[in-house]
Image (cartoon, rainbow, N blue to C red; front, top):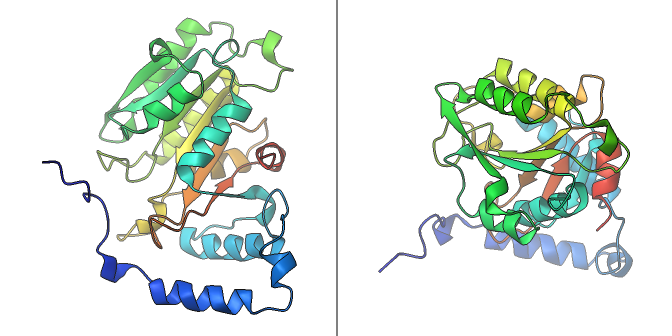
Length: 258
């Protein structure tokens, strides 16, 4: 019989008392009805976003700005949300790239968003992560002119990649800095959206967290092509269905439309 509890932390690690204390303190505030139980800002509570930015800056050892953040209800739903808003698999978005192997449940999310299996393209790994050379060859073959200018104004991407740059699931590989920079260049050239599953970054125990792929996108000029998809489910508790997306401000504003 398959053990359905595989992958779940021991319950003695889950901070139930902390959640109870925090919830009671929050709900006892005089402004709790409007602050907690009322409809909130589309991007998330501004105070929470500021605190989240400070927390991530400390954990990443790299500055994170609150205007680049948007609250989500977890990484899986955020992935579905991004695919729904930013891709059109029936027309504009021709391919979906995945690390091979990758997190197996992600395929169903893409299928639910309208992608077909024949649009799935595996990208193998080597000792420095994704084989970016193989990806570049594929893109050059199928998009010989680079970005399709006819799709420039429709707001959707010509291709999408799902990857786990740091501590990849299941291989644990870490994408090298040189490959991260080149991936952003390729994404800009071919109008490819890169969705980074960054839920394991803060679990880095040896050395600093590698520079996030989205940071390369944020610090260089050009249209937004990378979204960092984060979640508290791996660092706090699986039932804490709260996460965040980080991207250029223009893209975050689009993703704030729920």
